[in-house]
Length: 352
Image (cartoon, rainbow, N blue to C red):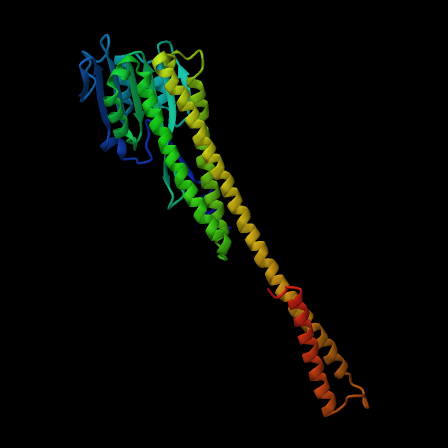
């Protein structure tokens, strides 16, 4: 295997923190900050979090969404809403595993949004940071969330629940994230089924290399999804107060159960991928056995002929069968022995 092939096999995952992007120009051209204020009179979209009235009033909840943002934009929001500097530094740091970090009056929830490129077998793991407090929710990510419109629609349709407890907005966000994981699991399952069909019939020498790449692709996705188990378990800890309200605690319990179910689907897909690998290896072994059987039968058919030719080719004078009659006898003997061997092979089922 050449060196460039090894690089392709190993470089399957690209991780990006919420303040960085795999596209070097995105931060300069697509930075976007959006604000929604949930009040008793409804949901009010705003262009920015104004300094004079940025902090939510009593009975209000503010949701700030930063996409492809610059560090200064998150720092401005953090100053207005009183975020812990350690949490802001963690959000601005490179990619980190999904998890939950609690501060004095708010918490930081880290998750990964997966963008799969099946054509190149690359995985873009984009970090999504979510700050949640008693009156605000801040979501920060390097790329626009593929399900942001669904989150907005559900949040506006359940504005009273969000205003009562902002953890409900966090539930919506994580629920949509799990939904994308479920769709990804379906796509991977379809991909593995197609590979199984190819594994049974393919005799391409490069297929093994392709199969190894797909195997690492599936395993990498499985690991990235499985890491979220720590996140959902952390949200249900008794000492984590931000989702312990009676109105939302049941939602997060159901969310954890659904996350476990989706993780189980990914694990099954990984097992299917391993089975596909075994199917291919068994198919190769079966074809190899067929080739060896054919070569063995040819050797057995040629062996009597070799012995007969050796006998009649002995260089001594006045041997029996010397002449035309002996030559005809030799040919008949070769035909009868070969036919007898083929009949024997057929009765044993070796010619199938």
